[in-house]
Each structure stands twice: as structure tokens, then as C-alpha cells.
Image (cartoon, rainbow, N blue to C red):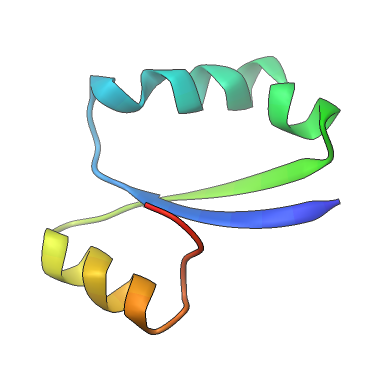
Length: 56
């Protein structure tokens, strides 16, 4: 299974990601999504630049 580290802002605009995770769509396709909520855009950018996250 492939792990994907995703950092997102909290909010309803991420509902499709949370719904897909809850419904098991990622797991059915061999992807383990690790969601992290970011406290700020600076934290998000630093984490991406340092390779802590794969996608935002």
C-alpha cells in the first residue's frame, strides 16, 4: 500500500477528501492517506519544502 501525506486547511472545501477516506475509496485503491490539518500557510509551505508532506 502506498502512503500519501497530505496537509490541508480545516474546512468544508476538503469534504471530498474526508468522504473518500471515510468511504474507504483510498484504501480500495491501495493508497493510505495521512491527513494533517495545518495551522497556517507558513507551516504548510515549510512542511512541503522540507518533504514532510507529499501534497497540499
